Image (cartoon, rainbow, N blue to C red; front, side, top):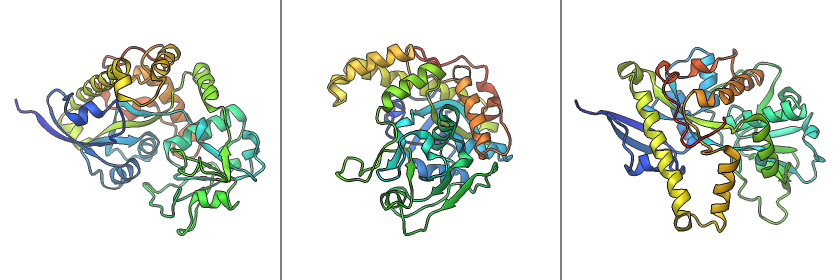
Length: 338
């Protein structure tokens, strides 16, 4: 029987996915064409046009879609992108913000209110520091340069105040001139290391805080997940589990290469000590795949999405994924506590 051709769109930066790009790992029964697309553009194209048969997708945007009855995309419990986010809150040097609680009543920028990184940031601000999303005035738009294209129109509930900045301005520019007090983001600002940048991290010791957060909550925040277009899924309901298996092999290949050959592949002098620390903290591989292994993290994210006005109703994690993946064997690799 011939393989099923499948176009998958995703990032090219993950060691967890590169074996699929290079063809070192091939999904069983699938002729995979891996198309590299920048995340912001990819998420917009998937929401607006469902352009690719399968792709990485913003977990937050998918949850918002499903809560509104939009079922064009169905989730696969593979999570290529995860990241702690305490290190991605930057405050103006003259904003008078010394602790998280000082953000209440302030003007805070975010590239997109709906992006998953921002959901996790707002969640720890509320649940660990008592600052609710409705207590902040939010502004979205171009991050380090003017220009903004919304991936999915949002009508937020719960008294959330959100405005789009003028098209000729950027969030970092407004932070620098005092129009904003802080920004939250998914990537470190390019100007962060420049002298007199005018802003600094809210949590300078973010690594210690993030480690404590993980040990306390068990959450290694999920950013992206894999989706399959529903029409493809309905024709080939075995594809989601085939993708779990393939992505798991690709992840394990990348991890093994990192552990055994990092001195050849990564220009970080103490990478081995980092790997050993990560194995110790996470109890093994930090990127578990599969539904059951990630249930607690997904459950929390559905709650955050609803309380921040993104989802129109509280979702259950089971609603997000293909039925066949809910009871498939967990692909946790060498361990993982989330």
